[in-house]
Length: 458
Image (cartoon, rainbow, N blue to C red):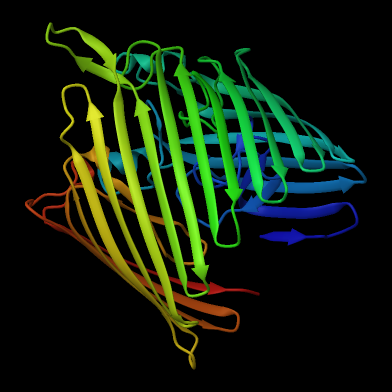
């Protein structure tokens, strides 16, 4: 439950499930964002309390959050008591409870969270202080013996975070920064700037330095690692609107892991880059093209039996065409190609193609989406994640790996404040009789999903 503008000073009260987004995310960020390699820039949005819409089974708070405002000061206070699935070494994020073992992990520990964010804003200048603590009912113990790169992961029951953030806006120029400290006195910091000129072009530059010992369950700032630790990086992007029809975007990220990380036993470097073109020749047609490169070094076994980090380069290119026959009927066509270049192997690749129709009936409040996809990838490195339309307030992305076909249909009926949505999807794989492994194994060559939602605004 969320109530806004309750009084002159109480701007929002949320009771129940909610998420928080504060500063640049080094202290607290639970909101969903697309990759930072986009034309939206790297500056995080303003501090927010977001009602949780059950879009996942993880990363949300259960309790009370309030937003107060007194002139130039904004205060967000929050408290949460939530049950989590814990298997003895890590927090489970799937929400599945299908077997006796998974059921034994259900709500096996609790997490208590409390804290506040105080922010001062005046004439383009902003200064914020965030402090919170969280406690687990049982000790978190990462499996360091099996995964040495987890050596500096959080261990124990208690942790607290303090962060200081600031930003300054003058005309079309903004500079921002945040520095955060975890209970073990390890730091993480981020410093960036964005500049927009002539209302057509923008440039972003951002530097980050996350100590390998920085520990924060709620950190989600820009970076390669989800936990914002053991990483340094320099990010630069440029976007320019050439005219009303064509826009170009260029982005690059250079990163460095000073301590051992996933699948590598020493410090390594890496790069990410992206080129995107958006062309709208008229109201009926739209073209989108983007290409990206990702190089993250992993251990490979050499001819002499020794392990050494080597480049693992993955390149992808996507092209999409959208045509609006009428205001109620459109066609989307999209294709992609991928190629990977790793130590001793340059032969793996992937490709996909889909066609999608979106139809709105002119006399009834019905929307119908139909999409067919063909895909073929030789390994998981070359898999594709394709966004799909889904139920309201939810996010859906199909992971395409292997060889096969996928179809989905989404039907939506909206009548005033009531909306009913139903989605059906099926993915059929070639040359296999089993899909996935362990508890996710399916003894078939296809997967099918059916979901429905009633959405009522009141």
